[in-house]
Image (cartoon, rainbow, N blue to C red; front, side):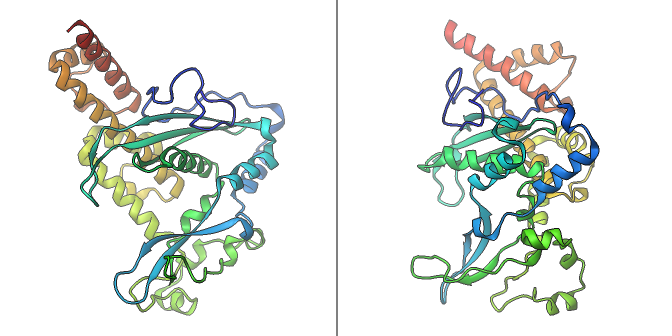
Length: 348
């Protein structure tokens, strides 16, 4: 466990490279009496969901155009400090805590440059006393000088979004602007009213724009621009992208694990039925964790062969891996097989 509200690169009780788990696990939280009223909880959740002040919003270039004058797609984001400031203001520094676990994936070929690289994976478990715990995973290529820092920030923000903090930022799909010679935005878009604290308090929400018909969206200023990219800030593109990523995980996980995670985390059989971006992110993170677990299992199998796996499965009253539908069960199997592989290596 890392120190209270600490960072992933500040290990406690062991090396940060020790793999404690490859999936988020919710912790037990004692709920103080002061926060048990439904009205108080709703008030706190509403305060968490409130957008950040525009002064702390920054813009990141996520895509660039090819040919012609340089243009880039920019997305708004808030620094990690904005998240911690909100938590401290609402709950005090003693009212919440976070715990990180860090590990690296096996090396594999990166598609964009065909380099063999591993990924740094950080899982953050965020606990707000009185509200509960949520976990999320962030990742970055290991050859990035700031890989651990970037993955840590990503995991923390994703965990915060499960409570509603910063979740509104998932509704942005990006706006295309002109870039300078150093690929920096010459100008940044003005935030829509719904993305400001004042507009949010007035009841403005991003959903209202998405419900408009195409002609009405044009009138509202969210039409397509000349280079084939939409200027709107709706959630549909981002949500559809997450759904596609989730659907692509079925082949890697197998139907049993895939459907098991959908049912456990989102209570659906089809990822298209998940409408909450935070739940989509959580499902995808768990599926990616399961994929990493299967890769670790394959690596251990190459060292010990199938017989130890058969014995482990029998001890869990399972006939084959195709019956595994829970991340915790997969975790048990992987740890047991890796322990067997380690013993084989030492004896050899």
